[in-house]
Length: 212
Image (cartoon, helix red, strand yellow):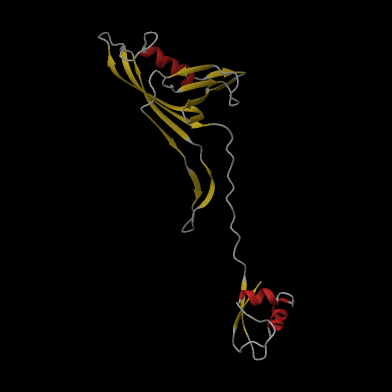
């Protein structure tokens, strides 16, 4: 049995107390998800991450009333379109608040919570009296719910270093004390400068990198 795409309709974003389930007669020809990231851009500076935008979803599908597609009961195209309009497009009012329905689209791995932003209906076949027999419907949705604002990982800046030129007779321990006020970090400085010994005198005019 072929699984059909369903649109579950709810009155709140908690997605409880389901209002209706709409099952498509024919599965989508295609669907498109769009994901975007917003960056702040100033002058010639690199883009700075701000936040993720809400995802969007677009689906396109056919409604066929010719009888070619097997169905338990005759399909009236105009009635199917009216159902979509009533539960996706038309607003409703609760406690003086007017809004549109929340929907959950489910099909295979697709599991999208959102609200309708756009509905296009393209009628392509008609009876002699003008009643539509076939229509292509495109629905666009925007993601609902609170977006967890992703926090960009801050890169630790490289440690500051000071370049010191040695004088005749200098030893590493003297330089460390002179530049940092400590003598206990001579091992760290030796490792930073790839020195094999920390005790002997240093060569004159040697550059030594001192972490700050």
